[in-house]
Length: 83
Image (cartoon, rainbow, N blue to C red; front, side):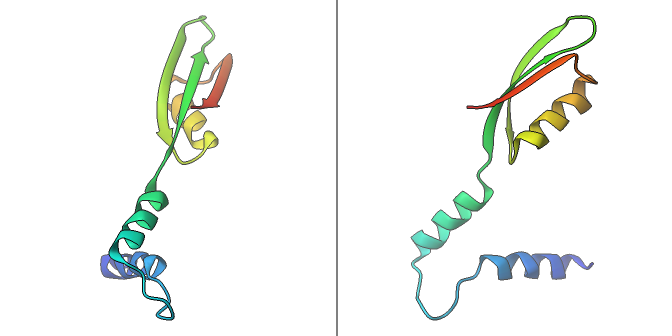
Protein backbone atom coordinates (compact mmCIF):
# COMPACT_ATOMS: atom_id res chain seq x y z
CA UNK A 1 0.00 0.00 0.00
CA UNK A 2 1.32 3.43 -0.86
CA UNK A 3 1.59 5.97 2.00
CA UNK A 4 -0.77 8.34 0.21
CA UNK A 5 -3.46 5.67 0.02
CA UNK A 6 -3.26 4.97 3.76
CA UNK A 7 -3.54 8.68 4.55
CA UNK A 8 -6.52 8.99 2.24
CA UNK A 9 -8.14 5.99 3.90
CA UNK A 10 -7.68 7.60 7.30
CA UNK A 11 -9.09 10.86 6.00
CA UNK A 12 -12.18 9.18 4.61
CA UNK A 13 -12.94 7.48 7.92
CA UNK A 14 -12.88 10.85 9.68
CA UNK A 15 -15.07 12.80 7.25
CA UNK A 16 -18.74 13.46 7.79
CA UNK A 17 -21.63 13.24 5.34
CA UNK A 18 -22.44 16.50 3.62
CA UNK A 19 -26.07 16.35 4.79
CA UNK A 20 -25.22 18.18 8.02
CA UNK A 21 -22.48 20.77 8.44
CA UNK A 22 -20.26 20.09 11.45
CA UNK A 23 -18.33 22.82 13.21
CA UNK A 24 -14.58 22.54 13.59
CA UNK A 25 -15.06 22.05 17.34
CA UNK A 26 -17.29 19.02 16.77
CA UNK A 27 -14.78 17.53 14.34
CA UNK A 28 -11.92 18.13 16.80
CA UNK A 29 -13.89 16.51 19.63
CA UNK A 30 -14.54 13.41 17.53
CA UNK A 31 -10.86 13.19 16.63
CA UNK A 32 -9.86 13.42 20.29
CA UNK A 33 -12.25 10.66 21.31
CA UNK A 34 -11.18 8.49 18.36
CA UNK A 35 -7.55 8.38 19.49
CA UNK A 36 -8.11 8.40 23.27
CA UNK A 37 -6.67 5.39 25.07
CA UNK A 38 -7.71 3.84 28.32
CA UNK A 39 -5.34 3.51 31.26
CA UNK A 40 -4.77 0.14 32.90
CA UNK A 41 -2.96 -0.66 36.14
CA UNK A 42 -1.09 -3.92 35.56
CA UNK A 43 0.44 -6.05 38.31
CA UNK A 44 2.93 -8.63 37.11
CA UNK A 45 4.53 -11.30 39.30
CA UNK A 46 6.99 -13.65 37.66
CA UNK A 47 8.28 -17.09 38.65
CA UNK A 48 10.92 -15.64 40.99
CA UNK A 49 8.18 -13.67 42.82
CA UNK A 50 9.43 -10.32 41.51
CA UNK A 51 6.49 -7.90 41.66
CA UNK A 52 6.00 -5.09 39.17
CA UNK A 53 3.16 -2.59 39.00
CA UNK A 54 2.73 -0.09 36.19
CA UNK A 55 0.09 2.05 34.52
CA UNK A 56 -0.19 1.61 30.77
CA UNK A 57 -2.12 3.59 28.20
CA UNK A 58 -3.61 1.09 25.75
CA UNK A 59 -6.76 0.76 23.63
CA UNK A 60 -7.80 -2.55 25.23
CA UNK A 61 -7.04 -4.68 28.28
CA UNK A 62 -5.63 -7.46 26.11
CA UNK A 63 -3.12 -5.09 24.51
CA UNK A 64 -1.97 -3.89 27.94
CA UNK A 65 -1.49 -7.46 29.16
CA UNK A 66 0.35 -8.44 26.00
CA UNK A 67 2.69 -5.46 26.32
CA UNK A 68 3.64 -6.34 29.90
CA UNK A 69 4.16 -10.02 29.08
CA UNK A 70 6.31 -9.06 26.12
CA UNK A 71 8.33 -6.70 28.30
CA UNK A 72 8.81 -8.92 31.38
CA UNK A 73 8.06 -12.45 30.16
CA UNK A 74 5.37 -14.91 31.19
CA UNK A 75 3.64 -14.14 34.43
CA UNK A 76 2.99 -16.38 37.40
CA UNK A 77 0.28 -13.89 38.35
CA UNK A 78 -1.08 -11.00 36.25
CA UNK A 79 -3.91 -8.60 36.94
CA UNK A 80 -5.04 -5.76 34.72
CA UNK A 81 -7.55 -3.19 36.00
CA UNK A 82 -8.92 -0.18 34.16
CA UNK A 83 -8.24 3.09 36.02
